[in-house]
Length: 408
Image 1 (cartoon, helix red, strand yellow):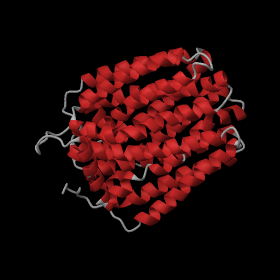
Image 2: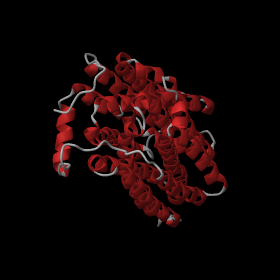
Image 3: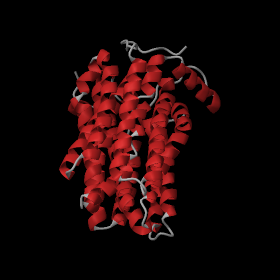
Image 4: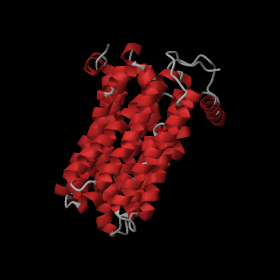
């Protein structure tokens, strides 16, 4: 069985893709954490932070179906490079956010970065099975699943520290450097990022979207897998509360960064601890339901926690479950979906997740100035827990067979 270390050390192209994703995800948090602290200071309202988060996820949700089609039709390496460069240009606009009057420019900048990210994510996920050997795919998924968590720890904690010590604009500078580094690393990948197409020219965009929608609707297992991440997404309004919770305990910007970092630590550890589940297909669906439920229970606990260290521990538990959920569903989809549809299926998967996140964050933004922070946390946790129970009841008769389904 391949190990995480061996697949990184043996496969140069996977190593480059992994490091490129690390710096790209890290750049995300060098933007978000300072902005979530800066905007309330400039405007005197928590609404702006919620709008930034909702813009990020909402634009992703709207564009992902088209981005998935692009990932199946064009060179995925070029897509990743162009996405990094586009995000770099958008990030430059953050340096103009200096007052309440210019605060809306933060939404424009984050929106531009979200457009780039919408094209980056499905292309990277769909490319992964092509840059590793089949026997290394489980280990590669565990490693790739750790990129977001790793850089949430590094980006969120360092973003919080840099924002507190050097100001937010130093963090924005790091973001621009990271995006350029990600583009450079991707240019060095030599393996093809998609299988050769033998079935003629790619279909027009709308036909391609109808094709993948029909494929998903006709297969109960695929329907189940692309609705898994929605559970944690519907509870993601908790992120808006992080800076306020940190302030409630007197921890300030450093505490907000610490909350995001612990969130990332959980997402990093979860995939590695639960990696054995990937080799037992009968465990995957129950494991997905359990991970969703644990996320919800974790945030119900955060809402009631009287001490900041306990808050940090429960946030870790919630995102330990969330990180495991992400990797379990990604790995299973990669095995079930053929290459020519994989970009679009992953885009649909991420679209549903990000749409759920946007809904949750907009809902939290609407009430954050009027409802106690703890009630917002409890509401988000309860929604995720309820979704997990309903999902498990609906999928209880499904099973995962060893063989992937073919396109018909």
